[in-house]
Length: 249
Image (cartoon, rainbow, N blue to C red; front, side, top):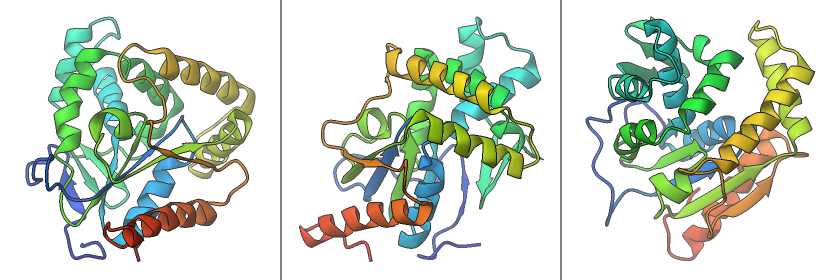
């Protein structure tokens, strides 16, 4: 299976075939934002439109959380959690995620895993363990990376940085619909409470807090459809192309 540019869409999560970053690196678009802001969906759509690779960085932390659960690692054992992050053996294939040979696409989207991943993401050794791995996803013809620190820490030289926001009520409603559509039970008041707690934790953590890069372009998707948000990102990329960057479309 290939993407629009003919590059492989199945990428080992260790990024073993990816070139390093730095001067002359492939073009990168980063899309950061709080939980359930729609950044993952938008990033995947933008990548598909451009024929680029996509990195769902949040999946790495969710996979680490799931690995912890399977191994019985406690959240207080930071060294063991970091080791679990380093030892991840997973693959992305289209919209499916595999770990240790099992399809964990649904498992990593469960709210308890997301809540645990938020705590894991605040651990400096875990972030260090995953940083180089994320950067190695940068490969031709380009990369769209979504997360919370893609534009500030992982790809600070990205040509376009987007900070995607939406009010917490809209985000909770979106997440509730997404979970129910996947057959996962969800309670809106509980989701709203959890989301507010995650927002506070993500913004206040000492390492790589959730904050817009100084040169990021903010898009408020509270009242935008997915198509409208995707087009807004593509329009921003096209405007950069007109100024000397690679044209988007």
